[in-house]
Image (cartoon, rainbow, N blue to C red; front, side):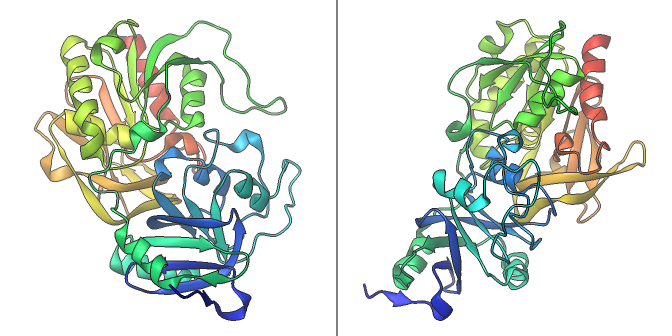
Length: 385
């Protein structure tokens, strides 16, 4: 097919499945990728967002324009490498201006094979996502400025989407491991847990490192198991509690193997269970509820959530494109938290057992400490048992 040059010496192009094209300046790796496009409204944390395994299969549009201004550093990675397929920003990244920076954002992305585009009207793009739902897109970075536009649009249309897709298997750990690193503390960084703790099994559907740090800081001796772990493998460790992590993809697909495991554990033990994000959805499905795809999901660090039992409002971090349908919760499961943006479900708890979960990310601390009590609640339930 014939190659075309974009306007104003553009070196990157974002093509939506409906044929809409956005031209800009590429940075990071050269090449092409396809994904679902979402937007994130957080004003900080772009490195944490790009390395959050929950963003597998997605390209992130950042609504805040100052992206790249604090550079990157190894301490802020939520997993070893970026998991989001690419990023879209308003302004080209500036030189980093932060004492913690060890690398430029563009160089960091290039080394890790992730494509980015700057100079985009992110307000227009965000409105399109809100109105049309999360679109399928193709993103190309071509330093010579030449693009096969027909092929780009075709690639966007051919992207299968996230519905029915199990991505937890792609981002989970290959084998079990122990975790003893705790939350960052000035001036030494991340301390190591040295005292005995409550034995907790964490199922890795795409776990963020800071979730594991919060568990360790709250008093847990954490062993992480792969997403496909069976109830027998969980119980073999004789844990005092079970944690279900965040992760990407369609909860119905991951639930094919995760839900039977959770149900088996609930039948065999009265141990406390705590879930976050995809783990929340897995627990809800195991208890009998359903999940549904959202129009454009919740992605940001400024989402108000109300605790229905205390009346308190927490400012939370969220990243999810599917949600628990609260209308399908069984009688023995209580809706504990709701979004004040759209009323969607953000938390559940079992009426008679120490089993609970939330849709948002309490470890991300945008409140900043509004939601850390959930980790303490989990440990208190273990001690109470």
